[in-house]
Length: 183
Image 1: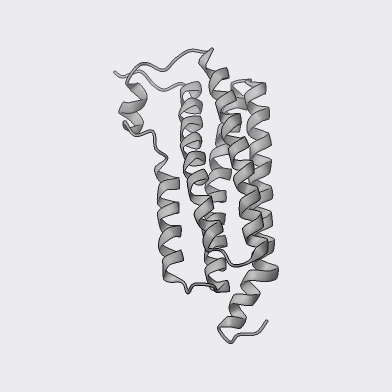
Image 2: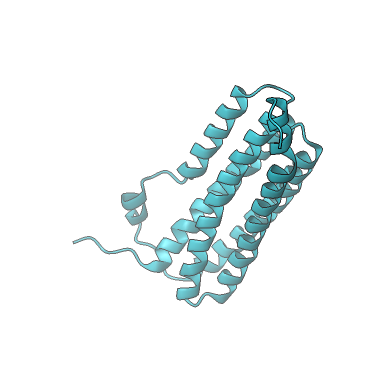
């Protein structure tokens, strides 16, 4: 009978997944900034890129903290989750974002609405991952890890709220007017 995963090993897996997600987001955000037309959206995405780099640095801190604890059995994580350390969820969301951005007209509020929708899907995925990791850290009484994850989780909620505001009170209104619809 194979050894069961520990909660600490699940936390480590979640941290590795989030690290990969942040790396992919750091690569994708400049592309979104480039095609966005709304100055407010461009600014929000640029600011989130700065925050995302800080979040990745926090994950580096967490990885160092977790290195001091018990290690997973070599090969066990790969048996359960596969050899791939790339976050497949974020990879899929970014591919979907690239596809929808290609399908929308250049220099339009509809493209900006598509960017916001894609960015919010990514934010929601991150909120789920960081919330899960924080719950594991809380249960394991890893208070420093919990605090670092809470800081990032709050930033992800803030980014989602900012994107929501941009959509509801600007971009989506403009996009509906482009299509001949009114408020």
